[in-house]
Length: 446
Image (cartoon, rainbow, N blue to C red):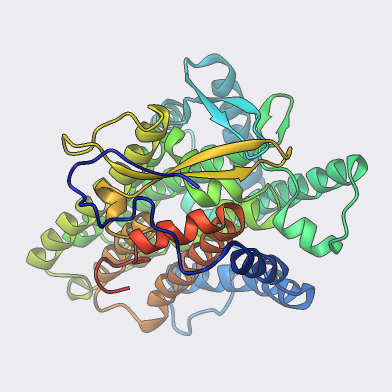
């Protein structure tokens, strides 16, 4: 067991050479228990799969119809189906074309199996060009600027069909090659392939990066058109949310390769949970702050200018720390632990494990820099980012704060899954890492 540390800032009484009070047999027993409890029961999964689309539809319609009396519980008919299908197909085809013809930065990704794959990172420029094409066409009156906003429910339904269809196809493809003892529903929801591709197209990247973020950006632009139709002068909080969300999308796509370093992305297989849950459910939750303020007609219904600027600063810091945390880990592992952090040698643990091919492998668990404060700082900053968007709504009805609870629950679930996976994967090394980095989400608190 090797614990590596090259920083002189740690004294002789640090974790170097220190063993956990648990013996290897105790750790193995804990790993076996955790492994058995890792996946929920099929009944619970069925309830989640059945309830999630209903909840997503309710959140979307509630936030989009605040000024209607009585407010509809659901509005399945929203927009024109023909226009929605045309817009969806156009964006889908253009994304595939841009994926092939636009210049891209290629990054090497190591899979849990030990194999390596190359990812093409050009989603930022493709999303930017699609947004410019949308603005250009709306400005020339080829279609109304509110097209995406008015047909958003249909767009999400079409994206759901594609995501669920791909999840089912990938499940059947994997089932024909290898059998499993898990029930169909468990396999379908959690998936069986980590980085599947169809005709050399990364399925997870296509749904959760290219289509999801592009439709999000188009929705924001279209919501601006809609807001001017009902109220030409919008509060400063509306412009703040629009700007911050567009910046968030641009940051996510500009640092596309960093998404592959996250624990959830490295472990979530291409099933219903990843393709529909991230690609559709989170899309419908994340657009809610824009929907709320796009439909506000009263000037006093949003945050004050002073509060708005304060929340903007907090949001920008949260986004910056989120990217910096992922970038630091990416650069550290790319340098094989030879990178200095803060002009000093970092603390890290060389965690040995067995790959899916049963080959010996090593991961570097960084415990310095941003990763010295807590183990899941990226989830904390992600929640804080969404929290600031929600607070900008200020005096909106309580139902519009439900997406914040949903996002918080999703992040907590991801954190739990990450902790479980790392304990199963690294065993004693992960326990030592937890002894060094004690906190989960909030430094010094939790």
